[in-house]
Length: 299
Image (cartoon, rainbow, N blue to C red; front, side, top):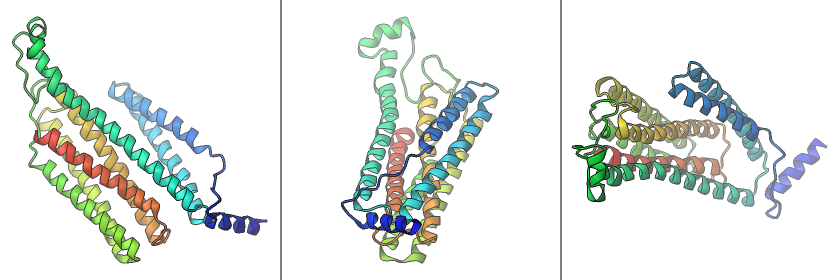
């Protein structure tokens, strides 16, 4: 019976008229619960609840375990020959829509930054129709960016120069975009050693970016008094760079997993969409950082 099932599976994987539908999975439900616990813990931690930090890490550990088991099932289905061209197209469409949702996610934060700088601050400073707003609420306030706002929330602070660590991190991410592209071409050419070397370099560059990002945050908090509580500038700065850093962390982990899968020979010249999906994601992360570097650090 097992042999018959394997033969049927292999046949379905090569038959363009058959679309593989996986069995019911418990992992989405478990992942939702773990994500809720992690976010509850994070929100509580930021609001200085004593149990928030521990709850966040418990939820994060649970989510990591669940995702590992979930994707292990997907990898097993892939290497077992369950997927055909129809399934491949579905995966590609799903990844496109996922990246589009990420574009909208960051667009919301960039939009908040644009609104604060181009509309809210001028109104508070008395520009245009905001003259009475300035007179009644913040008389004497002169709008300028960067700022902690009229109330000087969080006290005075200094900004991070664009031509130091931010520029270095820009060069690191741009280089990583080149190395992952070289790795992709090596995979398509069947050059295994070159693939592993350049994909490994991409992982190392991702780790290096995160190291310098942490160094930048430490410098901001300890030396510049630039914190998440530094008014509108501090909140937009850390929300944008922090969420981007989270995406780089996720991308680096995915690249490391791709390196392990390449080392195990899971991909062929023709069938390697998992690698392509991670490469798409990494290029997206690169592009977002260019926007951050320009609109947060330079302008």
